[in-house]
Image (cartoon, rainbow, N blue to C red):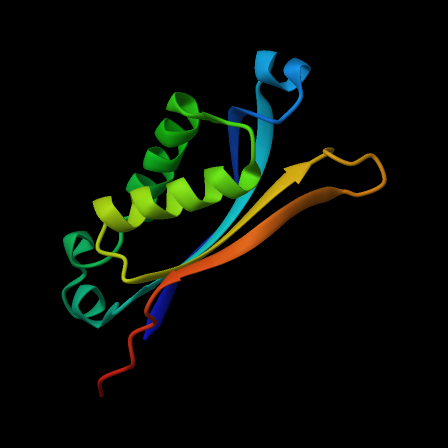
Length: 122
């Protein structure tokens, strides 16, 4: 199975547990790995036969613009659900980092995987 990569996607959103965090936007950095079979698209050079990563990135930004969560965990879980519902993604790995959340660390965050990783059919 092939995997589409989206790395270091920056989105701004309202996120955090402290009152002051609920009044500002903060940046998150996202890395996504999305399982798909690219062979049909590669054979025909047809974007409609693969995952359109530009459309996925636009949807992620709209998601970040319209939702506010206290926890990065909630952001990640709900975003994964959204993407798997709206795009033909059977499996994904999503890493979400919140830069500057802890002064001693470059960023903090988490990584989740959702769905079943398809086996390759040769």
